[in-house]
Image (tube, rainbow, N blue to C red; front, side, top):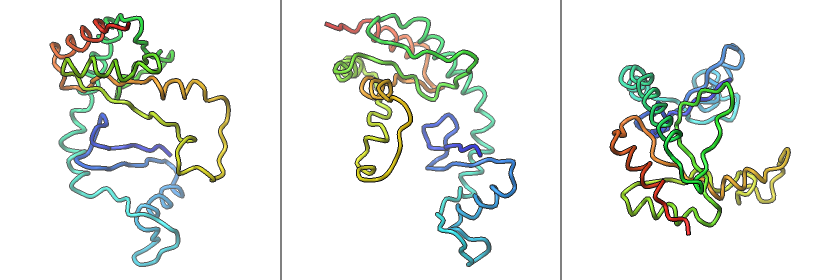
Length: 195
């Protein structure tokens, strides 16, 4: 199974929430089809506890006909922006994440790391220049209140994940950024006074 999100801010986003699951396994396809439609195996026959998780026809049509044909060009533009960021961001206190060898990111986000405790100062510096940033995933799943008292297992050390959660800032990246806007982000990051 592969799960895809069509959340509006994703590289291929719907008008509202949406997603898809793909598989080449017929039995898994049947289970997914049932679970997305209230657990029905046929109309009014509910064999499983399911959800209303159907992507409606309007969203599917917009994704397929209006947005999907543009995805390759949008992805190329995101890659160009990320390359410019990676080549020109030079502030030592703003750490770029490494790209694993052999991978080809599509740059849904462009996260950087700043020292824990300096994130808000960094964001305010960018905000003063009219640059919006975001923090993605500041609290790890094992630290969520909903899991308190629930059985779960964490495999391995998650110290690095905590460090990232406490220091990550996402810089603007979307295919509609102009070259001038990209340069302004780069210049503003490089001018951050860190003292």
